[in-house]
Image (cartoon, rainbow, N blue to C red; front, top):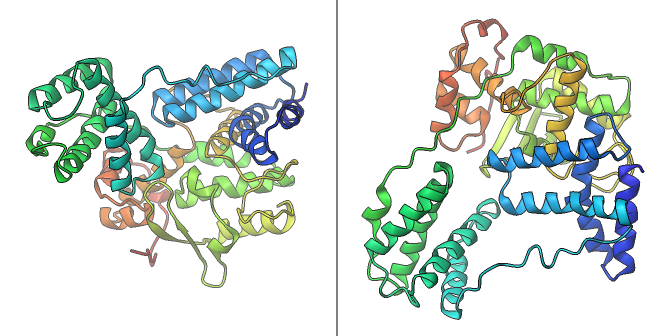
Length: 406
């Protein structure tokens, strides 16, 4: 059966058992549409078990590399399991037992956790991590006989970190230390603890991350040439790829671009970066502007959505997340005869690294590169200096005169 048809039938099945139209469509958008995108990016519309297993492995890779969090991984994986169950039996797969929490915090710790969450405006991208760390720490305290925080001292906290370091990779320990520090600042301010143990949280955690390569200019050229710009999908995809290859935009920012973000009169693209919340202005180069114009005027479906990039086939919806762009980039690389291996760093984000690398190579100051790429911390930009860029000066882009909003 066609994957999209199966997803739509599953939506209707949910309506029949009492789901609201809003909830049913939310499941389609958040759980099933990423599967449809994955299949389409691999040239398939019909369901097949082999590709479903590849999607399952892809999700595992994304959560293992911290591209998505565990809650999002569980959501996407459950969507896949739902579709498989529906196609096999015609029945719904109920999630209640699967997502039941296997522990219960005492009213005391629940109260402390809720007060902490209300004390600070945590970014949506990190709030789930904060909740997870609070649950882990407080549950560990309960299990070890600490009914309140009054007897919890530096020795107890150190033991928690010791256990944590044995069970988690370094990047996770880094996050635990960061949010535990915030938690104890809150606890000290509100009388739950006599001190914030500031010195205790100063230990360094090395987050080992291999330096990923920048996209090779010749491979980028071949990938762009693989796009059939005579089709509606080709016009859309070419504009997407150019935003990454020319301006170094993240996939997550591209899918959220609105029609109003394009300042045609002044030749600028204005948007607020999803990852850093930094407002940014980029130049609307002639090549990018022409590609956007051809897509918007000749190929973009008529719909009520403000997002620029819309699904070509019905239902005409925006991309759910940046995964769809990763899929299409990988597919065009395949069409260009360019192979990939797991963890090779040659995904869509390699285009962004190539832009940063090109600017560094041609002598653009690191501070300017940071502004163009929208880095809130210059440390994020310095990694481009480590990239081998001996042969890229002639390919560097001219970003003279870029104005960046502070």
